[in-house]
Image (cartoon, rainbow, N blue to C red; front, side):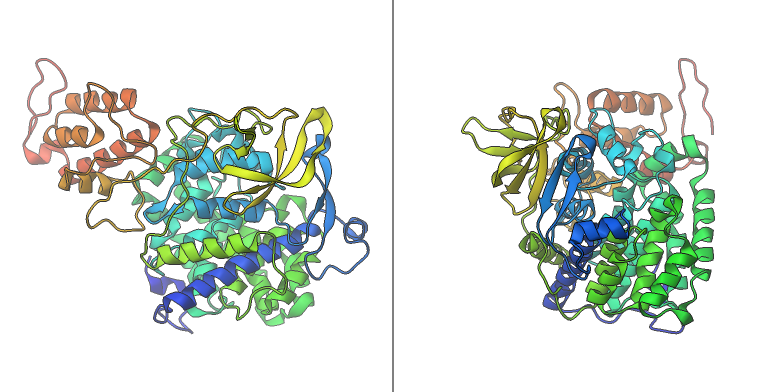
Length: 577
């Protein structure tokens, strides 16, 4: 995919010159704040009717975030008083995504194995697929690229699309190839159906357009954006790690390419149902809702339809504060997710911040600035996750909040925090919900036990450094074939996965294994023995990195018959030419 694929024939063919760093940082900051603002106002009206909304607002009109009450934690939960600007799972998982983005790329293992399992303890809302995926990822042998929770190939909701904006904000290039692989990695942790992935990809491309041109994509821009999204199978085919996911998906659901073509076709039909020439203001958005049937429970949470509704809302109402109000008052739709996604698009082109601050506004600003620095090629401090070789997710949703020997609070995986709001609220089953402010600035309403467990001695996050490879791109992920090649080229730098260096006692490390295999790539028996060694001794990340390198070497080597080498398949094997 090239930059030009994103833009219509009637308009600009290439993005304008990149904005100066400060202007870009303001774009990201406002996009982040308007997204959180849309979530905060839209969450008040989520999944309720007129009577329920009046009860939540006290009869006042819903035109900005307010203090309100809501039951959290399901039937055994508590009725909590939520402060004005309190945000839901949409923004919580967007912050989790942001934390997992480092100068060297998206740490998908930390997101999948730390952020998602811990989020279960403090999530305010969250769809069935996201929750089921996070539960499955809590298990030791689960991996992000084959997260086979029940119904995983049918997870087509908008739970991925709502959180992927940070990948666009942190991208050092406007070329979709720079950020779409990370978007898909993030998505398939929880949503593997093409409908869910397409929602995330379409939204990412719309946010990127707004960032590049300082305006939301128009109706005339959308066909080229969809054409760019249609090319995603090519991106996946060229990415070794995503190819692992595709193989796992196709084993259960059939060819991904065919499913993707069908889903893109559905998107084109949905766009055809939206008449751009008649859309204006609140009535225009109501027409969009009706055309897409967004109040139907079977369609309301669709990833693809939600992303389309969000961009269509920007056509109906370009003023962010009015657009957020309109989305929040479209009862029966997925109010908070449409509002937060439209807010991210409109915010990238906005001249001002929202009229009122959201909860943890300073955290949203600081994370936006950090991502802007990454996009500019800088190396700002990043969040330090636990060592994943020793990390154990909370056993249940009530086990994430712990207490140190000194009596301080600790949220496992996220670090120390302080109590807010006095005593915890007691719910069914003897569980409690406590407001906690984490050291880095995020406010959580977290489920806990009556007596907090003692925090493990290694619970404070530890910085996990990746190799400082000369010439490495600051936005390149670790564990790929390119990383293995660079480590071989610079033998003084040991390969580290996103968890820890692979160095089992008495064996080769991955660098040495790859170097050895290059000399024996045409010997099937040696390839098999080497693969067995890595599978038996390595971590999941090591296996993924080694397999990516193996695929690269086999592609480069070509068939042994073409090279006139010998293939030995056992004793007495005959040469083949």
